[in-house]
Image (cartoon, rainbow, N blue to C red):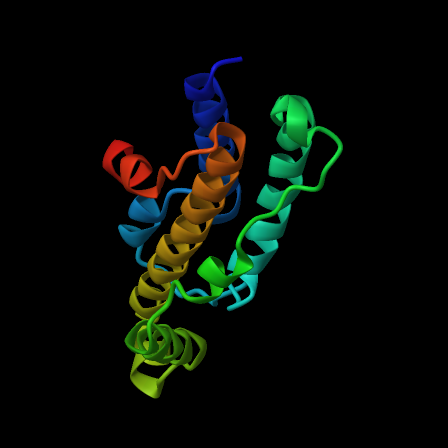
Length: 155
């Protein structure tokens, strides 16, 4: 399998995970209904990243360079922890608080879906970024070249 095909396989898995956990947020945003955050807790990106890591480890077993066969896949966890700036964390925390707490007015008018949809969109974008960084690290290990900038350009 070529590097391009491996990259596409990883992108397809990312799409599958995002669709599985987030569905179609654009469509949901047009539906006016009261809702709660449900499964969209702050640890959901880590749950999805864990599932993606398992997938990447399976691919590593199949496609690792010959000299690295039998070794563990190493992804730079530090990159994942540094993805969110302090401002991003504050924005996520504020959106989470707004989505979790329903004001009296939102209860009466049943309009809390706006806060929940906004929070879900932030969470999805953060998850997408984590998966992208994991893919870049994985492909860097497979190909031996630094590809983060190239991958951002392709996405």
